[in-house]
Length: 377
Ligand SMILES: *Cc1c(COP(=O)(O)O)cnc(C)c1O
Image (cartoon, rainbow, N blue to C red; front, side, top):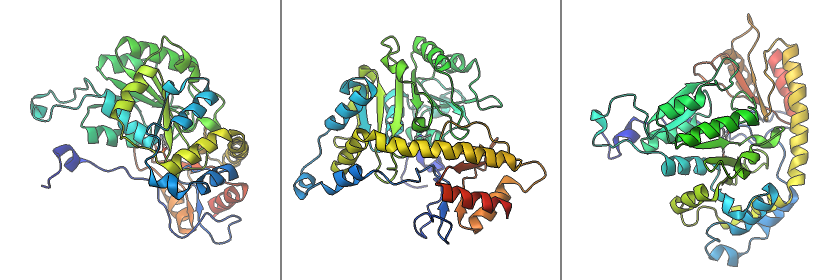
């Protein structure tokens, strides 16, 4: 046994998608790697972002950053029609996930662990299953109980989702919308009704909108609704803004929720470079939007092409699709392996309900062509 806490000793760490080191994603398939496995935007960030980073001086780096990323929060507030008090900036969306669990969920009493009836979820985190596999890892790190509520056959939320969460005594529910890994978008009415039920049960709802830039609508109307003081949205610059390497995300929510999160964050959780780049990215949102439009057009084309090859592909509102190979063909795992051998990376999840599927990030036209050709082989 090591020195770590028992729950860390037992922990199975999060497994990120492979990051091949053989170089940047190949354009027209000229021998490079085609990386369609971690939902990065295939286009680079806009020039204004690169200029903002280049404009960071030694003097700016010598000093600590503005602690709460105030300038970024002002710009984000203007973009979203809320106030800076509705926004918290974080070191990637993942830091926000870690923070919400730490702030809203109750850890199991470690000393009384064995006396707690097993399976009890009071004070814990609720999630829909399947979804982002980081959530359970973060719950384990915080040693908080986890309630997994299965999605229906179409990866939709069941009508009893909120009631089950409240009955289980959970303090926080996380829903990813558009859903990962299916790309399905829930209606605002569904989310509103879940938020209201959870509120009556004293439970916060975090809607993880990591992929919202590729969707037809977001859940901001819920945050602007004063009566829903338990709703938080997660945003990231990793996907829509082509800045996965920067590590910048943010939360939007009722000022009381946001104030609680500010208390629990590191003093300088987002650095000078990240603040400069993220602020420029939101100021020049129209540049990013052009890439969203290209990705969406390609998503529709790749969906049709895959369906034409017999794959089952539900409509996605994200920058990836979840594809089930036709019955009688090679298995998803075999296809994944054979694509990988050809330097084409897609995501395969060896877990219930996903084992027979591939999650494919939408790339450039050229990358998608390489993928589609690779599927014939
Ligand atoms: C990418 C992603 C995030 C946030 O990622 P960061 O790179 O840490 O900003 C959050 N939730 C889901 C479902 C994601 O796919």
